[in-house]
Image 1 (cartoon, rainbow, N blue to C red):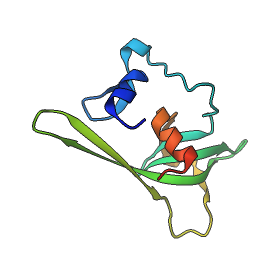
Image 2 (image 1 turned 30 degrees about the horizontal axis):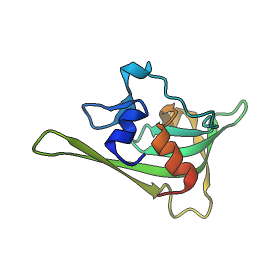
Image 3 (image 1 turned 45 degrees about the vertical axis):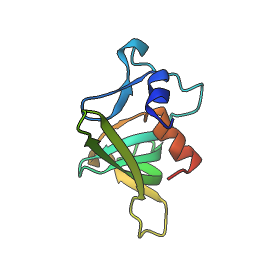
Image 4 (image 1 turned 90 degrees about the horizontal axis):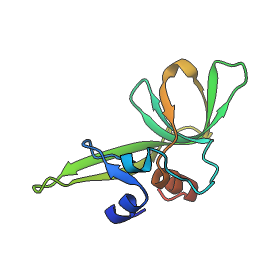
Length: 128
């Protein structure tokens, strides 16, 4: 989704903080057109890093595997007329590592959720 009208028609609204969220009219439930989104998550770490990554559970372990995590950097700016514009950028997380697979302790994760469709699409399509 590239512009405001597309986001609104897809069932999102802009929050006061400048983030796209499911609108109340959509019941908070956005249709992902039956795409497999279970393994791509938006992960907030306790150090404040926000990642978009494929996640694999380790059975019976204290860790979760992140495959090819991207650091998500969001910047919001308000114009004089009150409109808020948010720009999202990605950066390689642990960019100096020779591997793109990381084991992260569960207790280092603050929360995890399903990303909005536009973030999911950009991650899957590799548009960084």
